[in-house]
Image 1 (cartoon, rainbow, N blue to C red):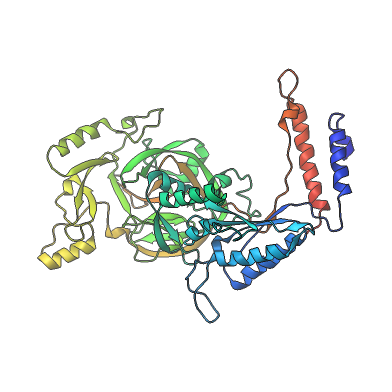
Image 2 (image 1 turned 45 degrees about the vertical axis):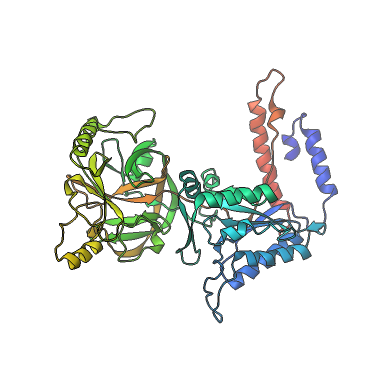
Length: 516
């Protein structure tokens, strides 16, 4: 078959290549160069991975692994006699020792790639682990950077480092300080590199294939989730947006917590048959999402569904549902965060002229910013409720005890009704998400919304890690310059034929290679 598909122009080149392969072929020759392995968070799994890396190196393959599953240094150890974990960098030393003793393919020492997620609590130690010459000398290292971290760097805000074992925040750092440390060490030593995991996964053609294991599943929402859209319809199911197949203006939160409108790009299916959990709120509302989808809490932090507990309060926003399509000012330049409704500007000016409090618009409703008389935290209330002087029900109870006089009941965005009463697994569903410009979060409408009032929660969009475990690369290349004709045109017919041949050749490699 091979020779039937060859053309006079490429016969000599392919023949020479195959002669070189067979000339250098040895017993048990493996034709794959790179493998990835999973490193589970257990003593058995860790040393199994070292053993497997040693066997792959013996056959001539390089090995890469993400050590982000390993619990951080100082975390409690499960099982055994107890104690504290030594952290992923210490176990990378075990891998490095293996690399120094196992000859790769009988010809050279092992080649290892180590990766750690940027949100891992030991990331700062990881970034500087190769500062001293000779340390982890058989490793190249890279930081797995996601969109959320890059957004935090851009906005110069704090970034949470979370335990992979519990999901809880262990430490909070300035994103730019962490970014500067990565850049400084890369300039000084050549390590660490950067791996943009979200970008890689967006370009991954097999991301929806269940046979292609992704170490971190997509944090997403179900198809019946109502997205808060700003095109006059107010609330549209995610599944319908995907079927409409167009970018859509949606409500989201800016870095100051104000509701703004941004474009959501490419609403899409991000997974099939994914585990889905149901969150029930005190008011009867139901939210469905994957376990690692992050929702905003009343205190401004974000938590994954797996971290939420009964008694937690979600951030719940509300606005009058008086949007009409003919009130929407659509602009092709996407400046949706500017004033959407002309009448809202007039309303804002009128309100601001009657108070010394800071007024601003969320959607088309005027709010004021105040400072809680109990805890001192800034909070917002509707302009018509600006007499409220506490930020929460808890502070209200304290104020009642102190003054024996409750100052009104807030009808602001915080509500007792937003308390979680239960979280339960409900099965598998197709899940959806989209990419929101600039702020990378989205508001979704609660089922208890009425014709007169719209209630919604806020959550972050997709954050994915596309590194497949226990797999290898099977790479081939095509020199595009060879298909450019003398007159500058491109030979698409020959290029198409070469693609088909190349795929077939790579498939033959899978059949003839020996595996470790």
